[in-house]
Length: 135
View (cartoon, rainbow, N blue to C red):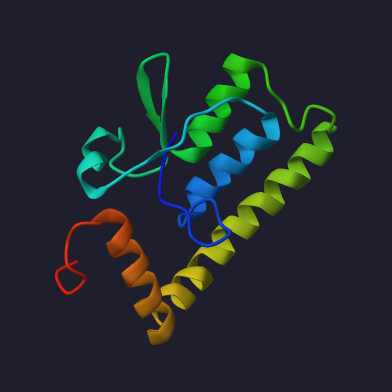
């Protein structure tokens, strides 16, 4: 799994990376965590993280990765749910993802104190050897 670096108690600074890593841990699928840098984004099939290499093929997009692993590995965390419960789960998931994205973006980037902390974190993670003033 190619992912963003961790921060404090979080396994990753990136919500999509955190989602995939959490799913992998819940399913108990073995994985190797590779922290990406700015230079390694060229390996990403969609130009973003997270992505995995499965049977020597890079696969990007959390949703696509999870769906592919569900099918190929026969994993179903929701296997015990009825079709109605799966539908409710999907509706809640999409609602939460769509409606919290913009709020979290505003909190991260529009509040000056948060942006300064996040900017330093990302700069150090992606450009560890660059002086902070340049990052």
